[in-house]
Image 1 (cartoon, rainbow, N blue to C red):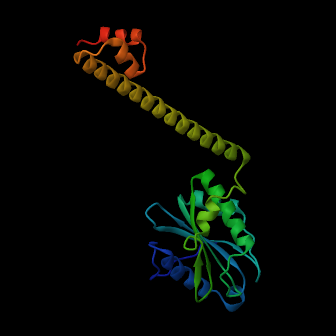
Image 2: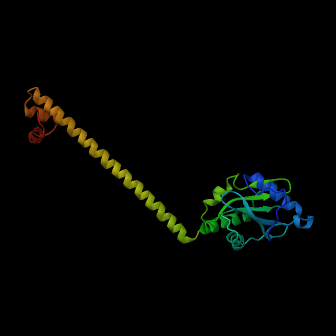
Length: 228
């Protein structure tokens, strides 16, 4: 069931306070009997943060509300929403997320990833206050969850991580090889310069070879390719 906006209702979301202010009014419009039941709403937004719709997805009991992801995303697709905010009330007045609250949020995040429709937050509200999953970092935690990720996607992620690690290792090995070659080149240059300097000082080749810890043949090869 789509919730109609009031004349003075804000239709642009700048933060969680805006969401609460809108949904608090929606909750308080219900009579006392319905207000004591759990509601599950979805706000559908475009990329700019404008509210395209507010939909009551499910109405439950005083303790729980059953939610099917299919119903959430069916409306989002029909209304061309690219971002969603879930909101539900706790008639008890407690704002602590239950295991069921975490579970449905996890499922909606994963289905949204497949459909490219992001669930950006989930609010628990009462007539007086609210709790944002995003603000307490619970959204970040659930976004990393693998509980409802299909096996093929997990395998894909693992392969992607393995490829990234392999690339990093290859880059490190290339850097090591490059550094080793440069070090070898510098050593040869220093050896050559020292050999030339000693030759210019009339030191015999056998002595120079001993100083440089090379053979006389190696020294002759250095002096042969290097102009003195």
